[in-house]
Each structure stands twice: as structure tokens, then as C-alpha cells.
Length: 114
Length: 138
Image (tube, rainbow over all chains, first blue to last red; front, side, top):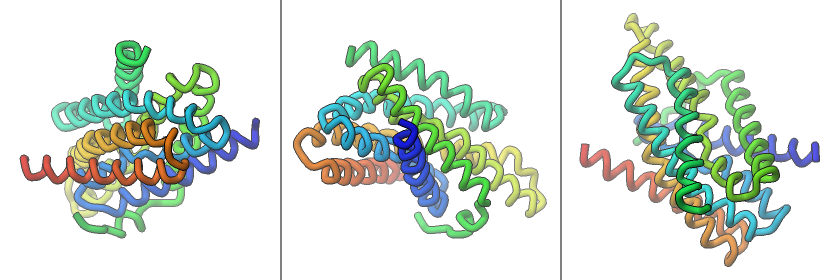
């Protein structure tokens, strides 16, 4: 169990760092921002899940992930609006908006794939 | 679009460690949530923007440092830079939805690596296309 968690931690960290570094090396900022929504956690998790529990199980996770991605769209639009129009602090804004992501993701899940 | 290795060089070791740590923690949490609540709920967290606050803060910090060196108050510039990053992430999230839909459809029919490679390719195509289209419109 511990070794599996450690493996998840290391693979997740590597994939996320790779995409973050790639995004950091690109300009302009909006283009680099595309990598803020890279499928880094998904690649690590779906690979490990499919190897452990099989591809049909991973496919169910991927199906739900569509809704998570739509919640991400709402999250990112909200953060963009708050940062550009209000004098909110970046860390506070991006952290508080995570609650909006959770509400949207769970709400979409209840509406679509119950 | 162009490559700018200056910002990669200006990223400190602790900033790389922060990203690695958050990436690792979110991947572990996504797995634990799926184990506890099932793949339907766990799958949502594959698109959880947990890394975003840390990345946006780093972007703000770098921008502020750069502007301060040029004798300009970088606070507002830092916020704008983080806001532009969020705009890019909003476009990228459409690619993320395309990745998820592709993986959902292909995982049962292709090998794991083929399905994930095609899904990642589609993420890149959709994200870049949305970026190009919106850039032309604005």
C-alpha cells in the first residue's frame, strides 16, 4: 500500500513537473497557460489505475474527468475575471476558487452521470 | 509563440520541489478518492486544478521581481501575468475535456499507451487550436 502511494507520488510529481517546466519555457503567457490545464495528473493516475484495476475501470474515471475539466473551465474563467478586474491577491483568489471547482464538479456529476 | 529559457533558468530548486510535491500529492489524493468513493467521483479529481494556485503564485513572484528590477511597481503586473495564465488555462481546459473524452472512448478498445498517447495528442491539438482561434478573434 505504502509503496503504491509512493509510486503514485513520484510519478505524479515527475509528470506535473515536466508539463510545468514546458509551460514555463513558452511565451506568450496565455500560450504558456495552456500547460496549466495539461493532463499531467490524469496521465499518471490513468496509467497506474489501468495497470492495477484494468482499462474499463480507468475508462469510467476518464468519463467523469470530462466534468472535472468543465469545472476547470469555470474555475479558470473566474480566476481570470477576478485577477483582471479586482485587486484580489493571486494565492487567495486561486485557492478560494478551488471551492467553486468542487461545487461545479460535484454539481455537474449529480446532473449528468448519476 | 516562442521558447524562453530565461524563465526556466530563473526558477529556483525550491520552486521545482514545490511543483513536484503538489503534483505528487494530487496524484496520490486522486487515487485515494477513487479507492474510497469509486471511479465516478475519483475521475473528477483528475482535472482538479490543485497545482494552479502554486503555479500562479510563482508566475506573480517572477513578474514582480522582473518589474522591480526595472524600477516599476510589479504588484499589478504580477496579478495581470497570473490572470493571463488563467486565461490560457481556461483554453487548455477544453483540451483537457477532449483528452478525457478520448481516453474514455479509446481505453476499452486500444492498448493503454495508444489510448493515452492519442488522448494527449488531442489535448494539444484542441488547446492550441482554441488558443489560435481566440487570439485571432481578440
